[in-house]
Image 1 (cartoon, rainbow, N blue to C red):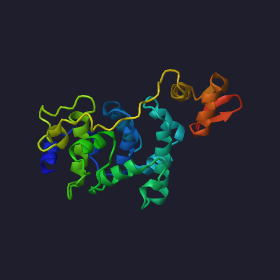
Image 2: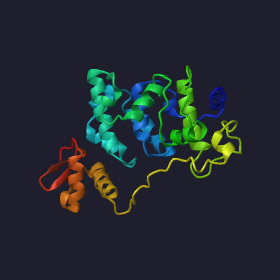
Image 3: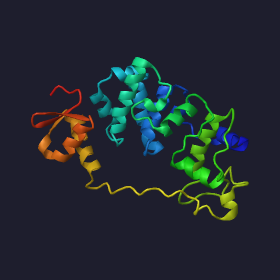
Image 4: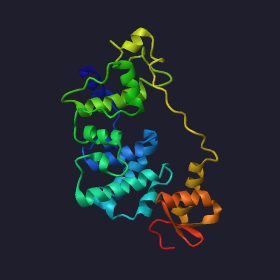
Length: 253
């Protein structure tokens, strides 16, 4: 494990959310990184932190403004949950059980504990699950005293070396020595199967996104443009119905 951590200190990616141990800023990053590539998240994260540097700042913001700034990142329910979680933290502080916060599941709770608090807990996302399945088939052994470094290193290892389709086992992988999967030639077999995503073109997700883009730009849109998608946005608290219009949350149209 020491070798992995040493490699991370030499070659780990310099990401803005790695320069903080603030729980709120880690939560913002984790909310934005769900199912979204790092490169796409970077400008959103920096803009969010510039606009709302603390949970109290975000809690005071209008949800419609948060949704508008989120536009283009996808899965806007994450923005609603982030805003709601900031409201809880601003009023009551961080709960003992982090999963009590809106939108915070087991992975995000572990990420906060590891990346903000430095606990020896591994947040297991797709990349981490793949590395553990191949390199630590008996389960994650832990890294006492190195929780933050080990957690970040595993993320980079899975993203850059121990990839799903073309793992670079023999090209300098820092965890190649003693890797059971590489030694046995079973890397492919030990790759966790990901559930395929449904098609985007013509999907409800795309239809909702179109309406949300118009709401962000104009503040309202005719509900009969896409009644089903409009109803879905209202049900999720991402928009409000007003007569024959769909109105941005917090909008005064």
